[in-house]
Amino acid sequence: MNEVYQAPEGSEKMEQIKIVLKFVRHGEKENDKTKSDTEVRLTEAGRLYASSLSEEGVDLTNTVAFGSPRKRTQETAGLIMAGGQDEISGTESLEELKQKVNEGIGFGSKIAQDKRLDFVLPPKGPYFDEMMTAFKEGRLLKYIVEESNQKAKEIGGGKDLMSYDTQASKIAEIVAKYLKIMPRWEQIANDEEKDVKPVMERILASHQSVTESFLAKIVELTKGVAERDTLVSALGNQGFGFAEGFKAEIVRGDNGEEQVRVTFKKEKDGQTIFEFDEVVPRELIEGLIMKK
Image (cartoon, rainbow, N blue to C red; front, side):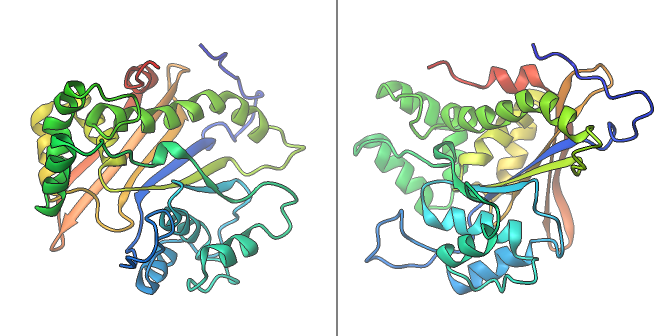
């Protein structure tokens, strides 16, 4: 277990210090059959919408955008991160966007990849066919939540195969990584000589059913199967819409332990049809991670 960092006496920063993880599905993608799926980008409308979700004038010093190896997710995360900056129009290609946001940082990139945000389809066969049918019929998430674990087990699916447990596990790994980072982040943010803003933010863009599997698991384990099914129904049995997602905030709880506050709200026709706002202990997050 990580050593609990204690803020200096009299410090007012400790309450504000947190790590914010924003998980979203990619934006509207182009329908270009001449490209590999890795190279498919956002449409113009998809880029502009992702950019509109960004906050104007926000300091991006402590913010990084992550996507899967598929370019549309990197575009989405990057535009949500930086679309509110004066120099970003929202029409940039991924390459142009990287050039603008990376200017002056010296090394690395503000837009990066994380393979855990990707999906891994099963090999051609009954499981693949059933999953594709569920997707075409608009019930992919329902299929993933209710049937995929058993199907993956039947074909001997590995840790990365697209199923309810494996997808939830990959997102849990990402959250757990930042839980481990939290004590060091508190030290840095409380160092007045560093003059660091107290919030670290990550924008993480993925694909339909991937991050939803994690959210559904959290709802299931904290509220029960019936509430999980309510979530799936609220998402139209298919999953998040374009650039839709949830937030996980890592904070220090009253008991001195790192905790994750997971929040999500779904509205339809001006009415809230599903809402989740719970503090989730790290033990629950770590319990979702599948052993290698």
